[in-house]
Amino acid sequence: MKRKALLLIFAVLAFAVPARAADTLLFAFTGYDYQNPNSDAVNYLAPGEGYHVVGFVTSFGPDLEYYVDPVNFEYTVYTQNLVVVASTYYGTLLVVDFGNGGRGRYYSDPISGGTHGQYGTLPPNATSPSTFIDGSVRLGGVINSFNLTYDFDPSINAGQFSGTMNLDEGPDLVYVQPPPRRNGWTFGGLAGRPNGTIPPGYDNAVQGECRLPASTPTAHTTWGAMKALYRR
Amino acid sequence: MKKMIGVAVLLGLLAAGTSTTTFAQPACGTGQIIDWDANGFSWETPANPVNNISAAGNSLHAVALVSLFCSPFADLNPNDPSTEYTIVFSGLTSTGTTIPVSGFTTVWNTDYGSGFFDIYAGSPRNAPSYLSMPPPGGTVPANYQDGTLILTGTLANFRTQIIKTGNNPANGTFRADYTFTGGTLYSRVAGSGVGLLHGLWNLTGAPTGYSAHPDGVFDNPPTAVRPSTWGAIKQLYK
Image 1 (cartoon, chains in turn blue, cyan):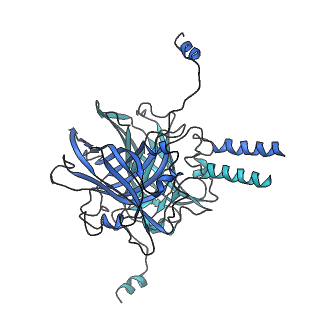
Image 2 (tube, chains in turn red, yellow; image 1 turned 180 degrees about the vertical axis):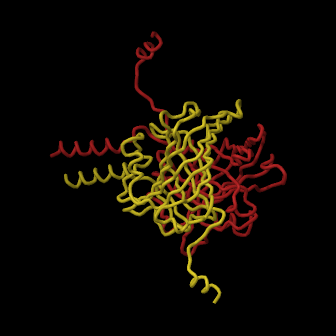
Image 3 (cartoon, chains in turn purple, blue; image 1 turned 120 degrees about the horizontal axis):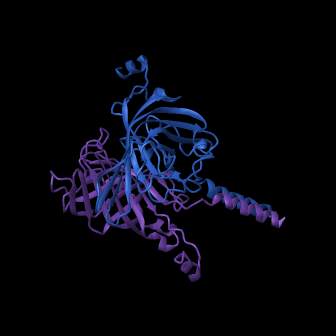
């Protein structure tokens, strides 16, 4: 009987293990982005300007999904302290680099009794980001090496952003285990393209994810085997 | 012992079938109609792109599990335990990859012309998720193509753009113009015109056999319509 049980367990585990580990999703989000301060009205994301993403979490990955309650809580995202340090054009392609020390967070707010996130227009405004950050911070992290590229070619007219996020705050931090896994998440997304559904004052529709890149597979070997590789 | 077996089976099923916790209405903003997140995968035949270059004539395929429905489909629950909502892209043929910028920053653009999309409501939930995604063939795309075809449509101007700057990992986006043309729920969007399909085109960490992990959204067509009756319209003015 024990042997049968073990066989069954191994069989189940064999089907459960993927062929190769994919990236791990922490959370995905959708929303809009805007510049603040926006000191240069002509040039998009000029040096010194700030970049913000505000929106809603649309799904959680395996680290968090059993600890969140989307039925009773609204989950929102917001980024801050992302300041442009350089912007360079390559033809129609704009490459924007940001200083380190940005911060990304997701918040929870009760659906009943809380305040539904409202974008409004011309952010920052009376409801944005305030109604997106009025709950409690559940998880946050510092964002470094953040950059944004935007291709103004009319056939594309869209961009993307990406940075490295090290998780360091919030009560949901404890669910990301072991602690070394809290570093090295990629916070990235689509920024674009202009369309009629974007509220005035926001620049782009944003579709993004915070994900942990899959580790490079390793294999045990010996010095002898490695040397043999170079003798062929 | 039976209890242990039960626990083992349950754990195994959880590991194999878990996808993500997805959300309902509150997450809807002003634009999106249908959204998918972690469970989106693409591949090309006869061979996946090499070094971000897609061979002209390649066929692009993609499948996805819906994460979020917004108006006019907000009544559909992507987390329904007995029904899954899946998306299949087909008929997209690569015209080859161009590299308009190369150097510290490199850009790869690939156009795929026109194609189709189908959205199914299938029971039971049997499409594999990113935690247990087998290579294309077998259950992919088959288990994404079962059930009732609730929406179908055409894709035009499908393009992916991959950009790598300095030491940052390559990242990508995609976009296309879509038009709903049929399906059992077509009446909700009939005549709504051309909408924008766009999203991330993640290159890293795609499961074995896949070229990318798209995470995207069907945005509202510029002119949304809603079926109504003369009686209902008259009621508005009373």
